Image 1 (tube, rainbow, N blue to C red):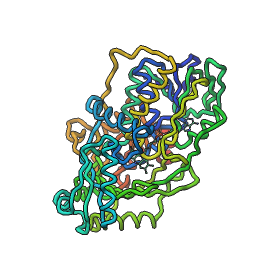
Image 2 (cartoon, protein in one colour):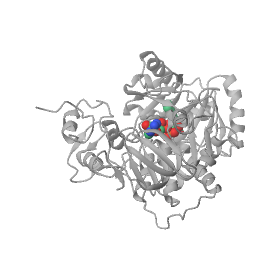
Image 3 (cartoon, rainbow, N blue to C red):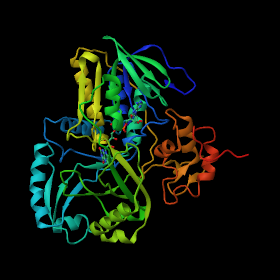
Image 4 (cartoon, protein in one colour):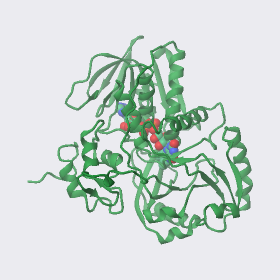
Length: 470
Ligand SMILES: Cc1cc2nc3c(=O)[nH]c(=O)nc-3n(C[C@H](O)[C@H](O)[C@H](O)COP(=O)(O)OP(=O)(O)OC[C@H]3O[C@@H](n4cnc5c(N)ncnc54)[C@H](O)[C@@H]3O)c2cc1C
């Protein structure tokens, strides 16, 4: 496995491409460039992948029905990313919940706006959308508040696993020859007209091309490397509440509000892990890393969820979290090649990056080819199958010799944890282990399994779970 652990020195060899950042966009980029035959190194400043914007989102695979119009970067990348996920997910063993979405109108004014959204969907190539009256909405979603007036149904909207997808993209890149260095922060770089020399927290690196996929830090990486940026990141926090698995049966589809200029609005959404999400909020903030949650926002989300699905008031919240969108002053993505400097910035991938990542990677690769860089695509590439932790299973707890269940809330076995810790792309933190296995993510939030987990993970993370025993 071409991963450079903290004790390894980094290679002095010249890479075709160094990708800065291992969020979902960097992972998809590494996959595309590797499969096309380029030599790729991904550098990530955190101890684990997916530690920025990609660690927390709504996990919706968007069709792009409400995306900016054709011709925008976001529209093209979303359409291609959506299609490619459908094409490859089964080969990588990635789950897909094809539940569809309803954009709910709660007043005649909102109902009047549905037709405009329908026209946008058709303009964007999403032809399956159609308007439902209140009776049709309630027959499809009987738990929705009966003051609903109408809805736009978008059949293709789906739910995916926000972590196993990018994990699989990067794993496929690594299995086919790419390299990864975590705990490796880009600090600066020089381009001599032919190649880049990058200064990192782990030493000097060389590459012909650099692709900035630094998400929430994209504008700062631009400043570090090319001393300019055509956008400024304006972090936009989104808080969520996660309802207990008992609430999951209350809905079949993703429930969306009629969107505003600023945000897609508060969504009520099933997860692939058998829960029900309400969120996200949309709050501008200065900090690029503060994912704290606030009681008043969470109460408002619970209240909002109860208005959409009245029976939700009888169910309990088991977790809360927040993510930060890498938004900017622009509406569209900011993907820009600086061909004369062998540099590309993939910036401001704000609220649809999970869905669009594969499309973004292909878009960037096409532009790279246009500037006369050519590689020979791999003829016989590896297709790793990632471990399945989505709720409908099959899961390891149903199989023999699994070592017993460690996390009873999420039914995570000792073998799943050991495999994650010893397997390829092993987690560099407890958060990473949670994203790979779901351990501690259930109703008790680790209350019952933390002691066993402490033992199992001893020596694995830079930041251990607890102070070492005497
Ligand atoms: C609340 C919320 C809800 C969302 N819902 C959805 C949804 O339902 N569907 C959907 O498609 N999208 C959704 N998104 C959007 C999606 O999560 C983002 O578009 C996506 O995560 C952006 O990924 P990224 O790779 O560009 O950035 P990031 O995930 O931030 O990755 C950048 C990486 O670069 C690393 N890095 C930064 N600086 C350096 C440096 N100097 N050296 C080395 N490494 C560095 C960071 O540590 C990080 O790991 C949502 C986002 C939020 C916040």
